[in-house]
Image (cartoon, rainbow, N blue to C red; front, side, top):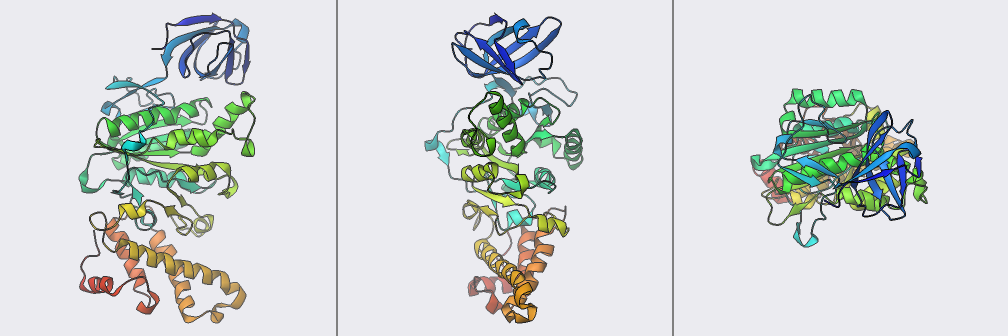
Length: 462
């Protein structure tokens, strides 16, 4: 509670979704606001800039027809909060936290601020446990680790949403530990909303999911609220209920566009490509809510989806996202054109915490050597593919020709697994099958001890 409700009659001005009040006192940042007008309203709002001279309010509904001079603005004295709890598992909500599944609003176990609390760096533990997604290019070569932030860099028309949905359906924690998914749709279409809910229901994943969906037709300002409301629930499940939570955010680009729109309405000085200069800080306030806390049973892992405008990985959104997060999964338009699904380009993809999540007791002892060898031969094959138009295939060395064939098979048989999920054991075996098509003198990263285990049929499966 910040103060008792205060009523102000008449606003100084309005600009898009923003309403300006003058001479306000005891206003709290993030405070909820109710706005009424004769024969109109009510509208909901939130304080985004607090000051005694001017207070700026974000209006959460459409503002067409709103006359600033005729409104009655009530500052509630309550900061933005949301209901959280295990009761929300299996439920679906809109971007402001209201049910869209036909069931009554949840009572929940607690009411918490949507902005959360900063994680104490001294209590943050290093992520070290493997999460199986069912996608070979991730599980085998860019392993997702519990507590990590690993974004998917997609492009317009690429199946980033499809991959995110597939991960929600198939992701699981090792050793059968309690696991939940918080799915956050930002600026998605009504068709995508129906498809997500139908797929989660059909796959049986709905019971362990909490779904928050902000549609493209919803107020722009709601796109700034939905990830914070959803992450408040994810934090509660992880750090209060002891669950291992995977939060999937799609699409971060829509969030950033909304942020730019609001910054433009406030006439702020723009930064790169018109985005506000605090874009990095704002994104960090979302991504840094992932992690593992000492003394708590659960964990919070994030898998954000970022659509790169014009497939430009240097665009401010993917660029800044890459600075905050621990790697990236990059989708390839070329692989998509060739009908390979999921079209993950493993060479620019990276999981900076992969080494912490693989190895004895987590995946298999030789996982690192296996992955390094696949990378090395595939990279050699990609380089040979670039040389073929110059020197012809006959101008390549014998090793390069073998690598060229390997690269083609790797993309079709290892990366291109289709919609069917693969277990980690299947992923590892598929990689070994491809490696064994080459003479062992080409496979310099696999040591004799590993080959001995392979030949004996021991030690190569989790």
